[in-house]
Image 1 (cartoon, rainbow, N blue to C red):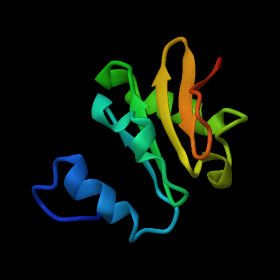
Image 2: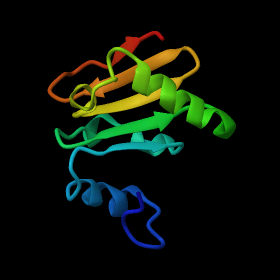
Image 3: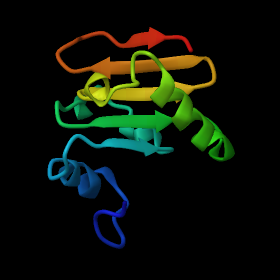
Length: 101
């Protein structure tokens, strides 16, 4: 699905758009999206900290993970996906969580 407008490139343009969508999960290779202060009950942000040609495989892997399989499990989280596992910031929690595959 295409959303937004041509030329949208940074968080200042993209984050407000998520507030208009119904529970999106946004995948990006931009490390700037992995910030605890970006947590919001209405969406999930995922930083794919993997090689570009591995992105699709790791998207599938995350969506099959028992802690992220259901949309409701992902909401309110900012997630980092990497070879060694998954780390994430969850809404209303102070500490970063880390889980394996």
